[in-house]
Length: 343
Image: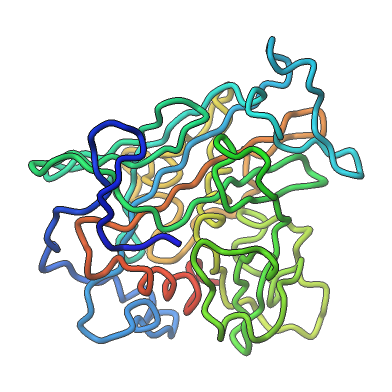
């Protein structure tokens, strides 16, 4: 299990520790108004009045597959029982990784993590080695502490989303799960979840799991984020359901779903930075103030079963510049106590 406590390890042999030399940044306000506008209590996101704002840093890296490379072509394409092509089970069939920019979530807003105070970058010795977010500042450089990670793939229109709570470049044999949701009552929030028999890097709060195992359809009707984040195939089939109350749960998977609004590198469209930060002149990215500002089908899904799966590694770390408001408790509350996406 990950921890917010400093851990002076050096897993890559760079002479760099995992830890946190920063003091908390004072005087940071809340973006509570959008929550109040929707009749939601900001204390769901900040459990105690006057508590520090909640934040984390993250990076999203696109994982590139090549089934036809010299070392990979004789391995065959992995498939399921219905002949859907799956992500590789052999490391040699991953050709490369395109690292994203390290970003910061700060109470509903996304910004670049790097500033004059500190620089953040993704580092990995090679494709088979563990990666880390490196922080360089006036203090000695260090690796930030991971909260969660997930590999999120879209395989084809018939198998739109699968996810593994791991880095498949390091452990390509990791177990994938179909997209599933816990249902909260009575507010009909759909909480993205792995199966209950899946060991978790960070345990799900017991009250969250009490209603029962996750389902393969969302809670509530007519969610505002369908099909732009979750495909129509996950619609609630029951006509007596009330309106959807939002989308929450496993944050790494949710960020991966958002990443599919970036276009493939060979096509024109939005980059990952455009998705999360917005283009010049825009008020921000597609996800801001707990609202999702897109309604169209993601352009980044594979178009057919003839296309290879497309996937991202999502890597979330505690924010070393906000130690009081970026703990396991704070981030778990953010995931499970209220919608991350309204509507």
